[in-house]
Length: 106
Image (cartoon, rainbow, N blue to C red; front, top):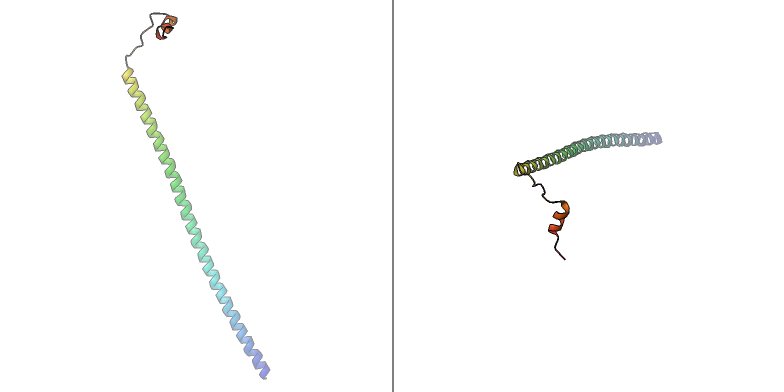
């Protein structure tokens, strides 16, 4: 009978330890699931932020390009205004003579 009681007591202790281990494993599993959920949320936030930065960069580049186009259009308009009505003189001599006029004599 003593042996039976000892066996029952050891069985009860082992059963208690198994239940405790099972409970601890469930707690660890729940904590791990929570960690995974938090990391997934963090990844989603970072991906969203990254997308925002990419779009912001594209927009900034587009605005810079638009500003550059505007500047060049203004420059063309200014040059046109400066040359408005300006006519190049028609040459009175042949190109060969003109060519000789600008070369130094030897």
